Amino acid sequence: MPLIVWAAVAALVLPAAIGLPVALARSGRSDAVARQNLGRGLVTQVFEVGTLEARGTGAGAILRTLTPERVARRVRHMIDVAGRPAGFTMTRVLWAKLAFALAAVLLGTLATAARPSLLEVVIVLAAVAGGYHLPEAALWGRGTERQQAIARELPDVLDQMTIAVEAGLGFEAALARAASSGKGVLAEELGRTVQDVAVGRPRREAYQALATRTEVPELKRFVGAVNQADTYGVPLADVLRVQADEARVKRRQRAEEQAMKVPVKVVFPLVVCILPALLIVVVGPAVLGLLNGLS
Image (cartoon, rainbow, N blue to C red; front, side, top):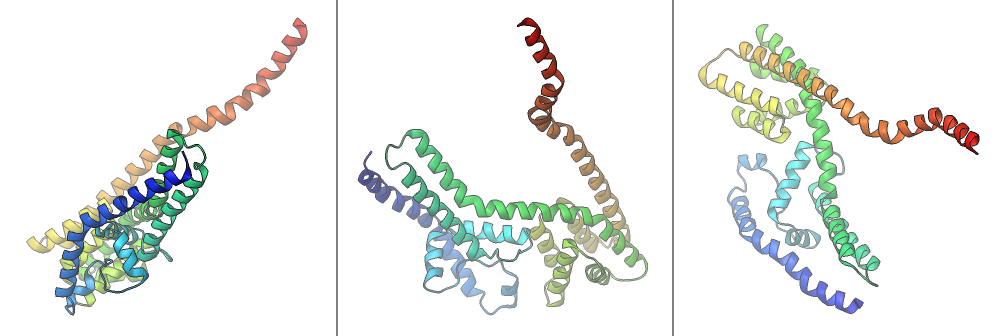
């Protein structure tokens, strides 16, 4: 197919592919702008999740036009789950998504410009989709590692808070002590929660934000138990002790699950890499001797 035909097809398809998501997300973007303008200047505005709806011109306006609001919110949530790693700002990630997708389109067009087949077109489309979601995959990997680290550290932190509460400290003081004396990602998140409460955020909202930005099931159960104990007046020392025991059981179960997966993961390298070399070393001399004897 001539190159001019591909250019004509791209001129017809690309505007529709870009304009359709923008048109579908326009209503949500308008609502987000209205909420941001109505909440401007309020104290609660400090705690809202940032979006791409800040007014401006230039590259920021282009990025807001090309990126639906739901994609921006998903990327921001993934950045929070990953712990806001250095260099992974929302603007950079969204530009990287567009840049990788455009690079895949250009390379695929150059590679299949002569005689494109259906398989090559499918491969190019898959490469474009993969390039568009590659930055999100990197964020997802970092977020998964961080969630696993939080789940491992949670039982020890809960034990420390239990001892502090039984010694006479309040829950917030025990939380602040665990955040200041601990090391690791969970201590950082607890420190951020303590700062949220210190600047005037309600405790229930601060604890719920902790569970939302980490996405760790054990931490979500702990936050729910603390909020419920605060509502019904249950002693927090008992709640912390029970939650620490449950978190420790979950940690042991995850370790056992990983141990059970090891034999299955070893089968492929054993069959592909180790077994052929072993057969060559053991059976090879016998086969050569047999061939020499027959000849």
